[in-house]
Image (cartoon, rainbow, N blue to C red; front, top):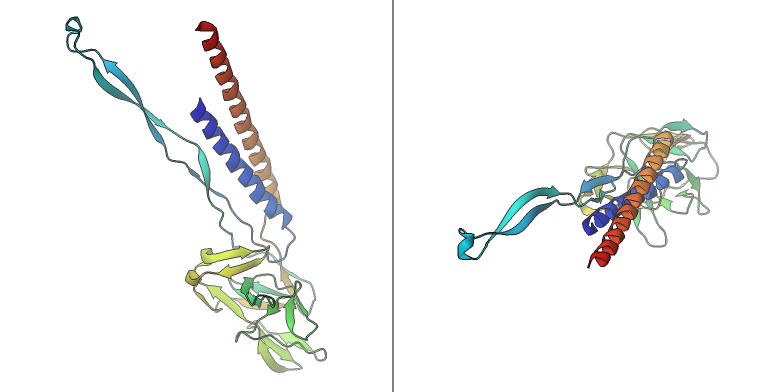
Length: 265
């Protein structure tokens, strides 16, 4: 029975992790550039059960010592656990918003931004930018948007700013910079930072984008599926409740067994 308690507890913990994951996806369903995370579950190793006993000797009348024997009963599962929470990088819906400093990416690329406080470079799909106080392109939380050469991108206060699909910034028809857009050979080497940011491990294989277009006056919506997330949340709660009831049932059975042994002894 104790084994069953651990198995049910493991199932409840997985259900709790699923609730946390789906809740985060739902909370960011209106966050531009957000990519939903998945929950991969694996079975814990099985245990082989055996029945151990002592068989009688060859001739019980001679009182020969018994022969130890074990018979296989079969495998027993020990529950499940969370294997990984990979990010789903599917393209989100692109919508026009008319903002000069808003950009969406059509394709697998990412913008590069730099935290001015730490110097850390991150990558994001959220192109809802603004003109910072120093006249450069920046994210709404103050990170500097980098050019293809890794420099800040000047955004003059005067002049018509147009950005083509290659990310070239044209002010009154003259090209002044190119917004940096990068792609990765290994998307699973990206580590989430906040809601829409990622840092790249050495094996990410970053390189200038070749399959991504920049769309000005646009924004990329979250790729989360609200209806599916709600259904998943309901299923996870039911899963948790089922494991909780299983724990309670096994606990009651254990108490009953202890009480019965106490009365019969």
